[in-house]
Image (tube, rainbow, N blue to C red):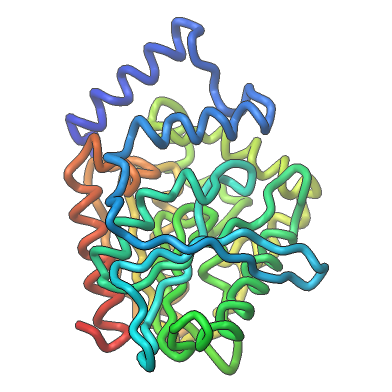
Length: 315
């Protein structure tokens, strides 16, 4: 599990800035400071996405009357009379940071790679909104997309649920009996917020996502420890609701979440789920958004796009 040289060089700069006192660890910041820092680092890691994608701002209703912001990225104009398969994307950020902007470039590029629309959802963040708000927002957003699909030119029966980090955790649970995902794309997801696995210790610091930051995230979103065992936060600890939905599971082998990701793959397979497991050597958590640093980011995105296209009958 040796770090990719380009990733290692980037982390050396990050860790040097930390050691000099110029940059604080995320768990040492306020949530507002952490959000600003996350968005700033997003710009540094990414090539910026493709501007040729058509972008439409949307609002999705929730059960308590709040409208969630969303963005629909189209690689080509909608065609009258044709309904497109699409990806519903839930961003990462530990339930505390992350936004439509932080994942804008990734969603633009994924739409182009797939040749399909990508709809990114901006669920509510902690600590202002605590467990189970993000989970309920994800469920409501999925239901809203299904309800509005035809008006948006989308095929409600050919939707894919995707997300990275805690967005992957949310994507693991969305779906309605009328419209289950054709595929779940879970990118280095949090699957057990109670875990004390070896990878959490092995990559506790110096590998971008830190174990102390994870614990800070959990404290912000689920301050009651008992809530962290809830399958809506820790899907590894619950039954698999929809084993007929296949999963594309993407992991980085230098990630504190690596062990729980592998455990989740076994958990899904034991329930009868078809799992396409992709492990990227030398990569760290969040590498998919690091296309300005590592070529593997683009390679992983292309592999995900191919899995999506096959799942929705476009491959």
